[in-house]
Structures are given as C-alpha cells and as structure tokens.
Amino acid sequence: MKLDPATRRENASLTRRLLVMVAGSFAFGFALVPLYDVICEAAGIRVNDAPSKIAETAGSDREVALEFMSILAPGGEWELVPETKEIVVRPGRLHEAKFRIRSRASVPVVGQAVPSVAPSYTAKYLQKTECFCFTPQDFAPAQEREFTVRFIVDPDLPPQVDRMTLAYSMYTLPERKLAAR
Image 1 (cartoon, rainbow, N blue to C red):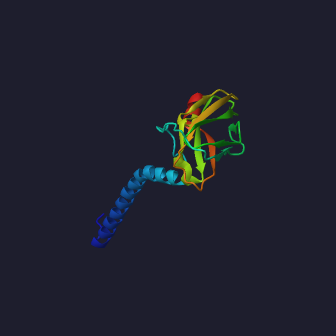
Image 2 (cartoon, rainbow, N blue to C red; image 1 turned 90 degrees about the horizontal axis):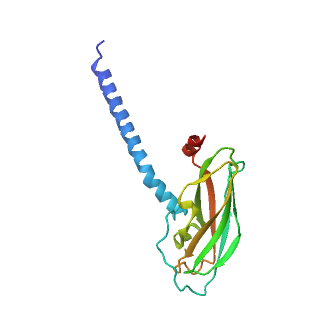
Image 3 (cartoon, rainbow, N blue to C red; image 1 turned 60 degrees about the vertical axis):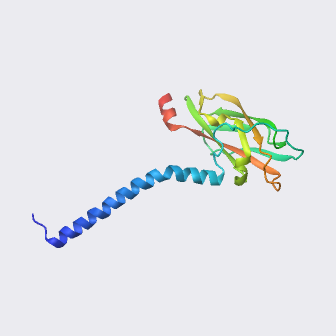
C-alpha cells in the first residue's frame, strides 16, 4: 500500500513528536533523582543520612528544647516510640536519645527509619553522629529493640530558634520483605 505525500508527512511528524516525548520522558526520569534530593533538603527530610563530621565543642550556656516524635501510618507494621518526649540541649555538646522500635509483622522484615527536623531550615544544624536511620534494620517477627541517636546541635543555630523537633518515620523495605518470606 502506497501512502500519499500528505499522509507520509503526517506520519513523519507524529514519529518525531513521539520520539521527542520518549527522549523527554527518559530525561525526566534521570532528573528525578537530583530533584528528589533538592526537595528533601528543602523540606528537611533525610538531610542528615550519614554520620556528621562535626566535633563536640565547649558549647554555650544557651539552651534549646528538642522534642522527639514518631510519625507512623495507622495500621502499619511498626511501633516507634521515643523514650523521652523532650530534652533541653546545649549547642556544641554531644547528646543522645533512645527510641524503642517494634515490628508488628508476622514475618522477618527489614525497616528503614527516615528522620525529619522541624522547622525545616534548622535541619542542617542538627548533626547526627550516630543514628539507627543510617542503615536498614533487620527485625524478626514481632521483635522489639532499643536504638540510640547521638547528635550535636550546631552552635551556629540561629538565635531566634529555641525549639526544634526531631521526628522519625519507619518504613518496610519491600524488596527485603519479599526476600525474607
């Protein structure tokens, strides 16, 4: 079947548009990773996902209230409870807090804690030196464990900030859960 020149032009135009859409989709897929990092950093989510290089300093007499929370989906597979709801910290000094995490799953699972700090612009001033959020955690069915987070509030924290919140969410890593069954 021979196509007339108008139909051939239309088909060629459609082919070009489809190729541009495919190339654009491919480029967008690659752009999602750095875009995700930028959005998370702007929102204060998972900014500190590696040990901090900051060292303890003499600190100051300034005090900042640090509240601990957990943000969990109702009916989820996790219970995450801070041992202490709030502590008063001094910037520049090493502090620690403990959390209890229990898996409600009936099979072995691997979970990952994701931290967030509020107000979000203060996330860069909360430097974790040790955190259970740095690595995935293996849990047996219905296992409960205690975890510690050690941190230093940077002395450069803006002076108007007198309260911060450190919240954790706990997620099951799906590919690890399937492998554990």
